[in-house]
Each structure stands twice: as structure tokens, then as C-alpha cells.
Image (cartoon, rainbow, N blue to C red; front, side, top):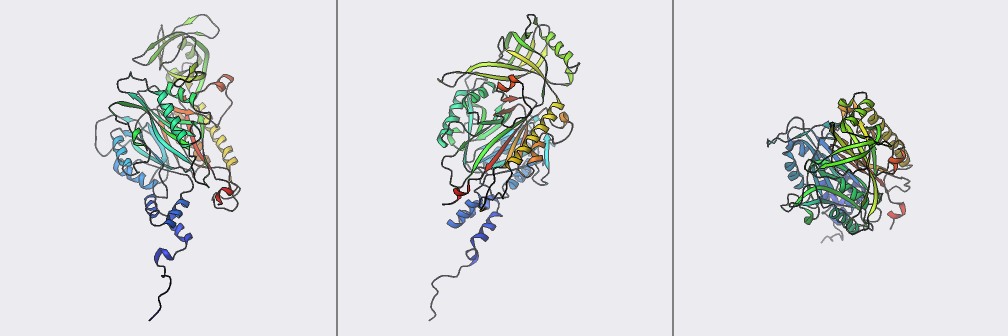
Length: 533
């Protein structure tokens, strides 16, 4: 009788080398790779090697059918290996589509993946079919038409992130239903963020926060609390005024649609993971600002202040700095009108108020915070200057600003130049592969987000894709997703443009107008010795 061999002959995939198997696995879409990781221990290890580096994947669709558009962008972002740690979807057009989009992505991205869906004023990104970059301005449509086809002026954008070395969670800013409007639980939000970050890392300040606020909530005091409570290294970016739905990775935080609480804002919190595996490098957040405002006229000092709490507006009289005469609203605007050579009708006016306020969280000792807060100018009469928002006090100083496309273009060029310098500084002497024998790479951009004022875009700047140009010119291969906002959040601007005045340099400003906030994510691979065991 013929003797049986001691080892069975390997057939199929079992006959392939580890290198060939890994090359095959690298070509799989995300869902297939997740299934492959369950086949065997060696395949699981191969999949982990493939997913050892952070990655963003993003795509948009302008297909008039929301069903088709959502499937297009989902297929695109999951067409390559990625393990979703978070997802953000941004749409514009018929607002009836927001709930439908939320249900669609929530059902396909895993129940523990933090998910935020917003409805903005427009979106920026690469088309899922053509790969062409688009900046598309739209607008909210509050119609009750629930047809599966949105209007022609609509679109949706999806971004999925895999960020090993960080932990991420969606944490809401809540307000009890019975509590007065615009009075949110800001201290609770700060403590929730601190506690989550401390549970994940050795710090109470996260690396970064992406934030979306409801238009009915006043985020100025909330942002002031966050600015006070977080370290200088924490970057915060987002949209102050939008509509949103969310799902947290922790079920107890999922209070969206609760009968007890309103969700006035949602924060996506990125905290360092103290238990990150060996060989994983460092992800950092960086922020840059393109300013679209120009200072105009003298400084004023508020003489009298009246607040209309129901309308959330403020009525002012003021003195010119250093003078005693009290000016009514019309007199103030006439002075600014003269400075602008009667161009007020073609520009947006704001006042930038310098505020010195004590701030604290809970029972902590208060600390004086100096900040610059912008308020849109509504109108003026022979008694008052009327501005949007509250929080202005008698004796606060303020300066007028107006929207200016030349300032915005110059600022965009400055941001692009600074990003170019950073890119050169981050450039590699060797390859980016962490398995290279010699790896002298400093940093690489893995992607980013853009939050641009809905008043900008082609109609304001005179040509297409200006707001995204600093990113596209310097990191053309990196994925980027952007939205047109109702109020740009940008805290911790680390990539500076032209030198600011002495006063502006010491003032904190986290809520901007007519600006574009650029949020960059970079990755520095771990030193070579960390890859060796």
C-alpha cells in the first residue's frame, strides 16, 4: 500500500506566499477586507498590516436621485481598504433628505461608528464618478416634498476616517426641553469632553474637535467655555449654524430626537489612545484661516446697550474712542458710509467687539479671557445701531469690518504659500512606506476638511474653486471634504498668515465670518525602532 505523505498538499490560497496574499487583500474594497480578516489568523494579521496607517476617504455626488447619490458615494469611499472609525455626511437641497441619508448610512457603517449627518449651504469634494473636484453652492429647501428625487440644486458628500492611534466619539451639547431657549448645558459638554478624553489618554484636552451647531442655539458662550477649558493645542473647527442628526458610538449618548433634551450642537472628539499598538505613528491636527473681512473706520466704545432677548439682538449707542459725544446708530453708520465711499449697499457690515470676561467651568476658579466676537449689523436709525446677537456690554470697544473679496483672495494666497512651506518642511527624503529600511519621513498630509462661509464662493471671489485652492495646490492627492457654512468655527489657528496687529494677536477668536477654515490632518510614522520587536 502507498504511504500517505506526512503533509497535505496545499491547494488554492494556501499555496500562495504571504506577500502575494497581502497584495490581493490590498485590492479588496472595505467590506470584503473586513470579511477576509475573519478567515484565519494569518489573514487577520495581513489585514492589520494593510490598515496600519491612517486614511481618509471622501466623495460627493450631485445625482438628482438621493438614493443613487448615496449609493455612489458609499461605494466610492469603501472601494479601497478602510475601517471606519467615524463618518460625516453633508448634504444640501431638500432637507427631507437628511433623515433618509442618516438612516441609510447608519445602517451600512456599523452601529458603533460615530456618524454625523448635516444639511449645509453647499459642499466641496471630488465627484464619485468623474473624480473632478467641485465647489457647489446651494441652499436649504424647507419644502415638504418627500419625493426620492431632490431638486436639481442638491448634492451629498460622505467622508469616512480610519485613524489608528486616536479614539473618536460624538458628544452632544444638550439642553433640557423645559429650559429657556439658547441656554445650553455648556459646562456639561466641557466635562463630557474632558472625561471622555481622560478615559482614552493621559490628558483632558483632545487633539481636535469637529463641531456642528444648530442655528437656534447661541454657540458664542459655548465656544468661549471650550476655549477656556481646552489646551492651546486643541484644534476646533466646524459650522456654527446648520441642521444635523448624529449617532454616537456609545448608546447612552444617543439622545438625538429625545423627548427630554434638545441637541444644540454635536462635537466629534478626537483623543489620543494611550493603548495604541506599537509601530503606529502620530496624527496631528493643524488649522489655517483665510480671512474675508477688512477693518474700516475708527474704534468705538459702547455707551448704552439694550438687549432684545426674544429676537436675540442688541441695540447700541457709542462714542468714538477718546471722545465724549454719544453717537446714535445713524450717525455711526454715516461715518462708516463715508469711509466706504457709499459702498455699504454692496458689502456686509460687522462689528468686532473686544470682550474681557471672566470664564470658568463648574466650581473651578474663574480666569479672565480676552476675545474678539463678530456681530452682523442689521440696520440703524436716529436712536440705535442694531446688531445680531447678544453678549455686548457698556464700555466694550468695537471696530467695524466689511466683507472684501480682495482681502479674501490675498488671504487665500497667503494660506497657500504657508501650506507650501509646510509641505516642503514635511517632505520625505525616503519613501512613505513604514516598512522601508530607512525611513526619514517627517510628516505627510492624510487629508482634511474645509469650512467656508456661504457668502464666499464663486459669486464673491469671481472664479471657481478659490476656497479649496490652497489645499488642492499643495496636497492634490490627499482627500479633502468641505462645506459652505452659516458660521465658521476655527479655534487654535496654528498656520498663520500676515502678521496681525498688536491687539488682535492677544485676542482669542473662534467664531469667524466671511472666512474659510482649513483643517489638515498629518501623520508622522513611528521611528523605525518602534516597528521592531
